[in-house]
Length: 381
Image (cartoon, rainbow, N blue to C red):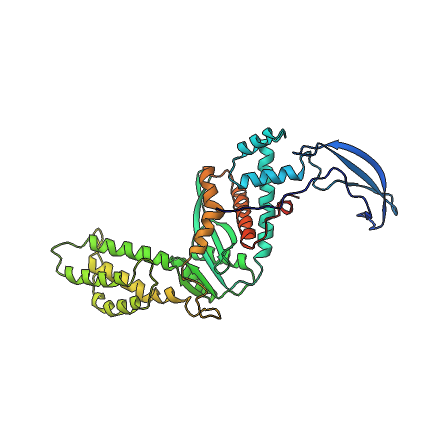
């Protein structure tokens, strides 16, 4: 069971006026006027507002009780609306909950509270990303905004597990990925990037001069899919049927489920590579032969195989690996920070709104991982 705890705003009915300094002259102030005003809150219905007067220049300013702002809704109501939405309620259901508590709340107001909290969370997360980060994971996913697909890039701290940046890309090419990584990390000198086997990430690492770790989980899935396709297309009458089946099974023996990947796969691929080097590529309109598909597979393993073991030199004091070689941290961030809630939203109305709510979920998750209850007051005040 997941336990969630939040720091909610406290609402009082009387302001604290002792030793109040004026905002203009930073001098003392005296009470100029007292008045009462109504407040929409689950507990407090009437609060006292005090007008103070600066002793030096005579300028007046307002002192309100804790948890009370200019709005007719208390910060407690606003914070509770954000919390209920974070717990999975729709805006309609949030309004229904407050109706049961005899607090009038419009659906648009609940939306505005969540958007304000999301914008504040986005600013706080950008400041937090300026700290030192050694290893980052990066992956992309697709959201629909007004029916159009938008690519979002997630950058996470591969060691801590929290997401550092979530940005939308106009294009999913190497230049866009590199610009996104630079903007997210600023002047941080990262040591390694963990990603899937897309070619764009390899170009990014080469241009930035950082080490690249290809996600082992992604590699295993793609490898088994390619081997399965080769064996499925292998005809009974093929002259090299037994040879190809034997080599394919030998490679599969080094890629077992729930077992660590070893350098033996790379060694076996290098031994087989020369035997398939003469395989002829298909002509226009023809299908690739099993030998040529084996050649392409072995070429990828030989060329990019070392990227599967980049994480191994990095160990802690006890000699254990700092990373597991997968990009599961970023995949988990994509699910928890955006996709789970997005599936219930049936798409988004604007990119700005989607960015805010995703970053709001990411901020709450990072606070939970740090062991500190999220302070909702800091997001809405």
